Image (tube, helix red, strand yellow):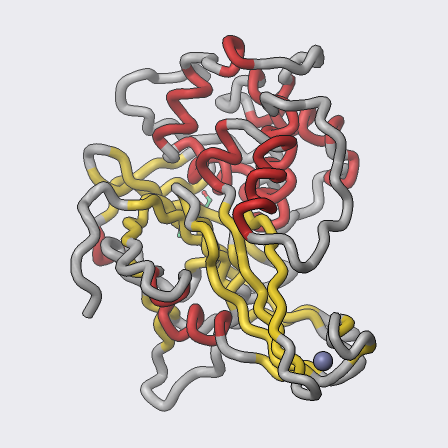
Length: 328
Ligand SMILES: *[C@@H]1O[C@H](CO)[C@@H](O)[C@H](O)[C@H]1NC(C)=O
Ligand SMILES: [Zn+2]
């Protein structure tokens, strides 16, 4: 178990239902700016917190050690039962961020005032949360509310590290595109009185409409295809085939008005095969020399045409360096 500096193509042993961890770690380790930061231990130079960064320092090539440190800092993940990769990713990013936060002692601002401007909110966020994780993965989501009674408009802004996208019911063509998932995510939604927030002007809960958009684009955007639906008694999984672009995903239409094209390229996919109870996670990641399929300890090259399957679960896109082209 040695870190092969050079190819970077290293499999990870499954130590008992830990394929979710292996798949997520493979995807993260193919986030170039994060991998180099870890390997060079750059965080040592910028750390302000007194606590040792246990997870950052843990050698990921030994998943047993890494996982035991992780379960110590996040007790929720005890036991070796199969976990959800998306949930794990959220906890892991949050934990890594806390360890290397450049501003560890800033107070929590608690609930922020609804009318704050997006940039003020963002500045506040960066004043207390500042790390390489935030540099790369944090974006800002805008939720626009429109009161149906008095027509008052208001906005709330939330930080996100991933977007969880609903999958539309299979269309007549039998295929669903990532764009349709994004459209559904950002579609105007009617909220009845029980589910709406207080209208500032009416000073009570009223019927309103809500629309989500991306206010600030992250360097890396993690798109979660929400295949699991929870009902009162069970969880079901959708196996709809969702097609997605490998390059030039334009998220501009989901951003602020007139933001132009905002282009992203895919570099990693976390897949989920099987059922809710009998599932298996794998990853497909791209490095300078092409794509590889990571199935725990096995690593095999794959072609681009093999990437799109109905098992795609979490997509990792990074902002492309090419200058924005004119939006179609
Ligand atoms: C992944 O590996 C397991 C066990 O080694 C194997 O049973 C399974 O078929 C592999 N999955 C794919 C998609 O190759
Ligand atoms: Zn109102």
